[in-house]
Length: 256
Image 1: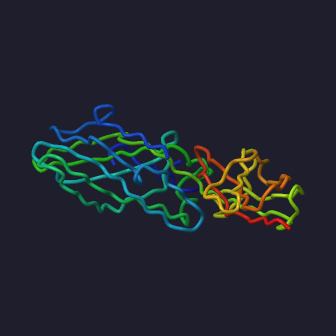
Image 2: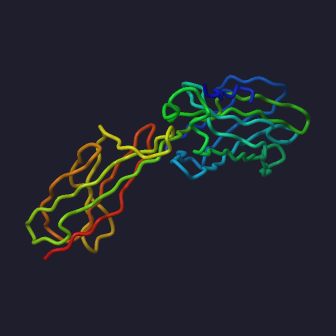
């Protein structure tokens, strides 16, 4: 049986909700308050199968006596209250005025121990997470702030593109294949991700940007294209609530 880790309230592409303490359940003493929270610079937190992820939570705190700092920061899945992110207790505060400071805490996710952090399929913990924090003022005021921000923790995606043949006559057909997969946090491997809409994009030789030309298949990707000019083809996956967006590296096709 795994140990269930759920932190209590006291403790792109991007989807960040900034909330004030007045809109969240909170308790404490005095007038110290959280007025703004930004997670990971406003971006999603993308977790793969091996790389340890560290990301900041910047909490703007206000009190008439000045801000002393953070005494607790916690984060967990909004629906299940499960978590595999940790805070080691360190933080730093940057004074913006006599009454207001921005305090930063850094959270850590290590894929090596994600699977042991709960007693369910850990992949289900991907999605919308929330942040709670306890803040303290110079005069001893403190505030236990629930749900001061929402953000998304997503499973990393991988996407490949291969075009064959790599040189054809103008007007001939070429086959573009690839594979969409995503991180499985249980076995720390990437598995095919079926049932998703993946776009095929083309960048004409010498052009600066890709253009979407068609919609691809699912999981294992394959389609035929009529070649009108040399250039690069790639697959593009826009992502989901639980899985990161991903654009493959382009594969170049030349004219005979």
